[in-house]
Length: 520
Image 1 (cartoon, rainbow, N blue to C red):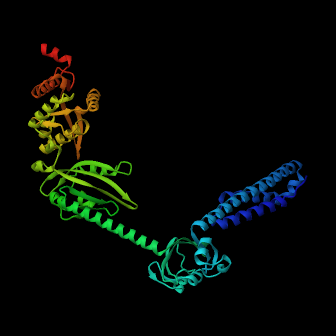
Image 2 (image 1 turned 180 degrees about the vertical axis):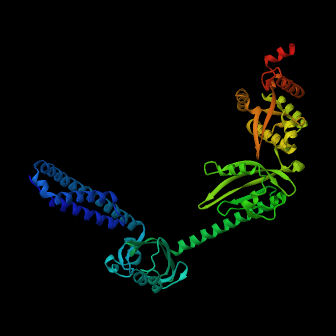
Image 3 (image 1 turned 30 degrees about the horizontal axis):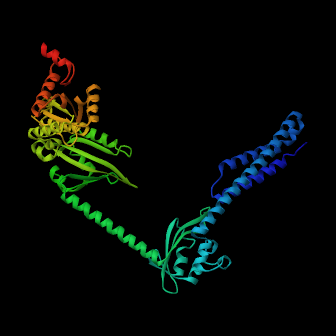
């Protein structure tokens, strides 16, 4: 059956107009639908232009007839799909407005603030029917029931509202706090969010959605606000008290403003000119060899790994002193900060730095604890260890580096293996740790068997990287009867580990190789 190409061309044009109308309603071009319809119209237009030539060729005429039939079917299918999508969207919007009508106050007005749609809940509050308020000015309708008192805390009248919400003022998502008084003088308020409806950049109307708060609700809100303010002031006063009383050096670095604030303790320790300075001015005093490493580590601080710990040399006026910076990245919206503590690690005032070495107990406490544990017949380990590389570090880098490395190693041992601060210093480099937890005994054993990781530890202090080498002798409490015997056996195992003929940096007192070496 012959079909003139004008028919599918008209159908495609109708479909294109329908898509353009949908685009206008959505305030955006539906690109997929538009280009499909445009392609169909363009194809039909070409066939229509060359219709006479195509009709002369029987083969081309047959092909074009099938193409036109396919276009007819495609146009019909597109029309059904587009109508279904449009109907689904309309149904969704209808259900949305039904839900809003039951739970929220909403009102749709035109550019002159005349009501075009309003929720049933809003009508119930105003005491009017829908027919009575349609095409009426919203603020005139409100004025019939209430006296308008203020807008967003500023005294306002109905005339002021009409001026504020005139077509010239195209505000977007602005809060509207409209305070109203009824005939009895009771105070209430409408809390609306206003959204402008624009078409081609011109204001066509506004949508107000929100709630009404009565006098009791307003009093409750004011009480909650007052409680929140009081709690905030309490937190503020506590924070200020902590800053005034703490002996730690505390800092806050604003990464957006590129500035840093430090407390008075840190100002005094680092010999700075004031509490507030730029990050560039603060970092200018970092040792030139350490600064690149410090900046690189700080660049690696992000939301995934917000915490960091680093050490570097800092110019405190007449010389460089080592400091340890421990901080965390925090963000609140657009505000991004680093906050934390900076500790001065200075060998001239080493006891004042509150390092791990200051907290280590001595030999009297060790013997008292050993006697207590043996009397309780508990099974535990006596770990006698010597941090042997410290003298070399003192000679190569200075005593402050050696002290920091020793302190960091003691901190590592305490964190991983020791409970209740049971670590004791016998001499400058000799320590004993008591391990009472079976799990931590196994953890130590696994670490020793896995390439002796706990005995070969690396640490970085700015641009300086040091290796800490340790020897360790281990005794079980079941192998000793007295506290002195526990210390002696631990030292014997340590000497075995330090023997050049021994193939490891650690030894258990019960090792069979011990007897073999003793015989030699």
